Image (cartoon, rainbow, N blue to C red; front, top):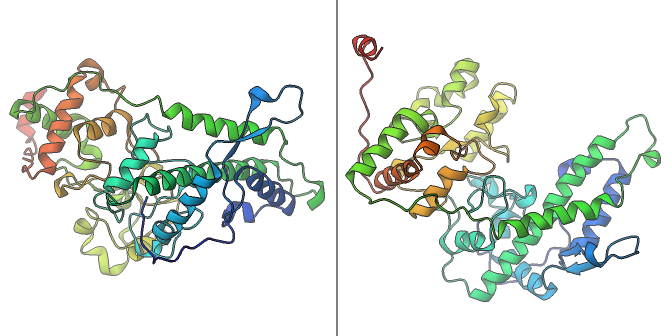
Length: 396
């Protein structure tokens, strides 16, 4: 989440942007979705987060709505967001602000309800403290800076507003999918079967409950952290290089574009723009310019790359370069532990919670954490020599 200063003037948008997949729906669905979003979330000028209260429904046909967040707090958060965040994240939280085309990694699109760096399990929503931490400390190695100076009241308000945008965006996204399944190309526009009215508040309640569940779902380490010493670092390096991590992060821990090898296995070299062919080995280990990445993605097409080289936002996925010293999700031991234990939501980085190396000895999480910390602090990574034929025969 990138907060960017775009001047002192408060900017209140007149309307939120509409998802592309919603714009492609027949008018009856566009109208139904727009009315639902307005009922639960108000407008850009008067933001709300109203959720159904099923416990108080009684004999009523529909549940009453209650404000999950005070409207005044959301209005304050909107003003902070539009001054500091919308330049990159867009006024709707779609990650398409005016600065976005020039940034890579791209600003986060909140509308999927997915957040990468959380203290919760894979696929779960972040806790409020997770969002606060990202704003306070930024995401090193990206365009998301630290905003330690932001006043507490502004921070609290903008976090609330981001949560509202995420609720709103996920409901819109899931309603678009539901409507897409109902579209009958043979039916007249007015004869289309609408989304069941009772389904919409149930879906919003499900989304709201997922945020509540996250608040009590922080990942707690399985064991007490052992001493940070040479023995632990060496064990972590052995696990990293020989067993668990080198497939993506490479044996030298320098990471890179996950599509690196697949590009040459699945496509001929002419899919690469001519200026980068001779430099591909170097470029693939680093973040390329947004323009170059867009050209490459367009040239390749979706049918060339395996599924695991893209993230859920449609961007190329990079395995972190640990030797750079920049970890987007934080450098504390607990931050790295949680990345290993839970994975990174929305990306090919998996959870190792059920990996046999870690179930057999949970301390191995900490050993890898210690290796990562040592590497990010500049400790050289010794690359094992490739085994000779004789060595392989001895091992057998």
